[in-house]
Amino acid sequence: MAILRRSYGYSKVDKEDPEEIIHRRAQFLIYKALYQADTRRKPSFLRIRLCRLKVKIGRRLKKLRKSALVSISAERIGVYKQLIHQLKTWRRLFNRDGGTIATLSHPLFT
Image (tube, rainbow, N blue to C red; front, side, top):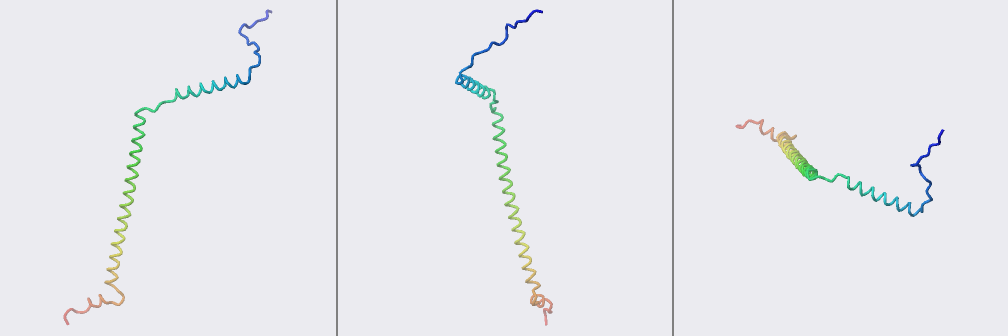
């Protein structure tokens, strides 16, 4: 059998300088970072407009929620005041000493 020779086989290389290895690795990392920066998708005009619109809508919703909470609490306070006023009126009307009820139960003309 014939012995096959590989013309494209690797030949043994002398040991490289460590500084040369570091330099080559740094060049590769720089190239990789630049390539990633170039291939990264740049923000489109439409995407920027959509983002701004979302922020605008979010602010409006937040303002609406705050105003709703303020108006609801103001209504609660108003209802509470009316309730207290009604209770005071009923207390005056039906006080314990019977002042108002007693005067109403007497005949008007005596």
